[in-house]
Image (tube, one colour):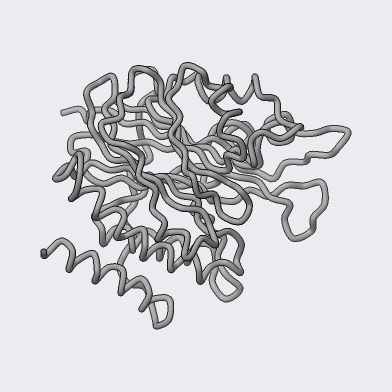
Length: 309
């Protein structure tokens, strides 16, 4: 009973903050130091696939990106064709949402045979705000190293004009997180990863940094901390000039609760790593290989390792 009172309070504070004044709490951030994926206790990969599949995409290269690091879980957004994704990853279990928002963009998880689903995929309609945007999905998993944890995958409303809806989604997400930890398989297990495209673009009257700080603070009230990416970007966009130069931005995030005795590291790979989050130039005659043939988002790699000492 006290847990649900607390979650209701968090959801209320999210809304009150948006329509009221000032930050609601100080943000908590995760460690920026972590292991190589080869010796990690848990490896997650998150990727917005840019309406997969589309004709420009090099599907073989995308499959290699998703599997070469041997992730225990792949969190995915903008799946336009679930059957095409299943064909791309035939050795993986694919669990994807039925709801997909007005643009037909499903969200879901994929995992290899070494990861086991201990619960069915739950689709959280409340996050769609009346089917206007995409749902969140959640499940409870066990990995090859015996780690059990909840995972929640999101793809929140995009653009600065969507900031009001995003904050309403934060409130709905607070309830999703509480229910994942307290009901059904895995009830009582505090270990949880909330990951995906949070679209922290800021708003006409709010900077991107301010929105991110508010989101961090909201998650901190739920006992979750962001695993910060030291490079500070996860996607490229056309920028205000809309010329051949693409600008880096931070949209894809991972929040973690529980996992005592573990340290975490997050880093966007692909173009974000290769360009070290600097602007990049991509044209029709000289397209950037990582962006033009896959997605404007970079895959986000999150690793967990046992803390030493």
